[in-house]
Length: 383
Image (cartoon, rainbow, N blue to C red; front, side, top):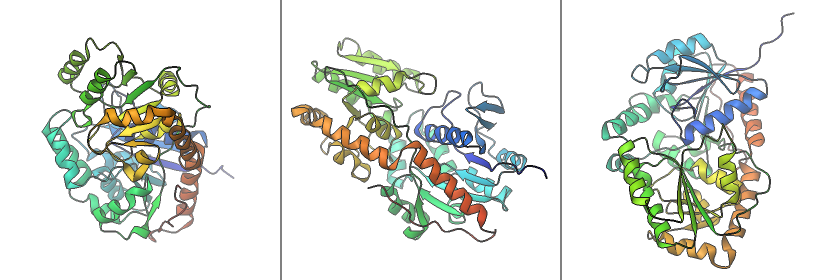
């Protein structure tokens, strides 16, 4: 008898943390896809073409299929060619709707990572990364016609964090008990060895809405503490402004972009750091938060998704990052916060645990017969 072929999975995302596009959605997609491939799943991904990316690439055991960003209609043909058993959108988008229409007999699930409200989109428009036209294009792709209807037709709808469930239910007109949980996967490193002197780090794109100038000014105001900013801007002129602003601040290092899939440099930086600072005005649940907690860093941010910042660091309500950092450094309060955060990530977001959840979900999906739509149980929630 011929051998049974492995489960064929197609991941849909706006990026995959490669080919010149680096963000939290893509990081989660690449980590998840690579881990599933190591478990014997045949993993494909469909993403917009970036830079020198070829239409078909091999990456970490996955096959990555690209389409021109202005031609999302080509997703349908790619999806039919892949012939996947399951399509898993890493966030709702036009790609979710197109794959559902192209492959109605397959099973379709979606993980919602950052369900933006109208207020969130207004913030994006007020402080765009590249320009307002790009923000409007992103809005059409994520929230344009047909996306919400496609989400409601999914075989499984999931939140990347429990605090997102209520917003997902409101945005898509769903009962909250229909929304399950698939946490963002995070590799748990060895027990970190912290720097001997206070070290503060930021990790993420230098986008205007993330307000990186506040990190620079915090470093200027606290010269006895070492600050490290990891990231870069998609706007070269804006990055030049930031670097000019930081010139002469001796305790601040602008380390630029570090590809965590190409070296362990980011892990070494996080292992040494005491506190991760996030100066953004809005976020979902940044992957950088979880990775920093995994390395025993406390958090300092104005955003407090699901209470994670206030629980494992300091949530700044009045924009006074200096006072928040002083509270964390006083009496080594950051150390206990970071240790508690590391334990939280180990219990709820650890990579192998999350991959087990994915595989269990896929097995249940394939055990039911289309067109019955599988309804996820609430499942275990992170403590």
